[in-house]
Length: 194
Image (cartoon, rainbow, N blue to C red; front, side, top):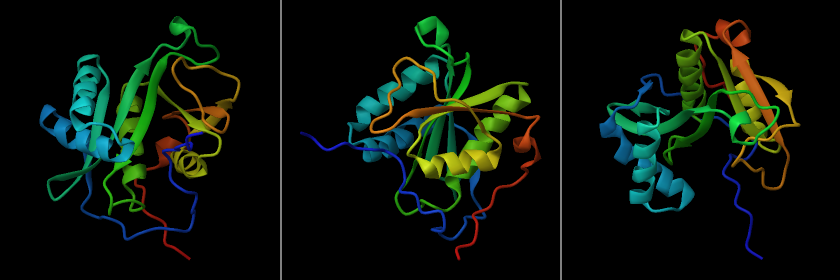
C-alpha cells in the first residue's frame, strides 16, 4: 500500500516566520509561467514541462494566476478558476470563481504569502461584484483558519465538485463576498508567535 500524500501544511497556528514587508502580489503574465511551473513541480513532484503545459492551457481557458514576488523574484503563486460544478454533474456547489492551491517556494513559507495571495484573488473577484468559493479537506485546519480570517464562511459539507476528492477526510465548501468580514480586511500581517 502506498502512503497517502497530503499537500497541505501541518497545523501549527503559532508558528510564524518573519513577515516580508516588500512582498508584492499581482496577476501573472506569460513570463511568470515557467517559474510557477517550477514551483508546482517541486511541490507536486511532477515534471516542470508538464506543469508549464497545464498552466498555459489553464491561462488560455480563462483561469487566473496570481504571483507573489519579492525583489522581482516570483516566490509563490495561486490559481483562481471559474467552475460550473452543476453542469459537470456536481451538486450543491454553485457556479463561480474558486480558489485553487497556493504554492510557496521553500524558505518563504509561513511568512504571509498565503494570506496575501488569498486576499489578492478575493479582491479581484470582489471588484467584479462576485462571490469567491473554495473547497478544502476538513483536516486542513491551517487553510480553514487562513480563509476564515479573510471572511470565508462554511456553506456545506454535502456537495460534489467533479474531479475533487478529499483523501482521508471530508470536504467543506466555503464562500466569501465583499459584504462580509473580508471587505473590512485591508491588510493581512503575519501574527506574532507566542
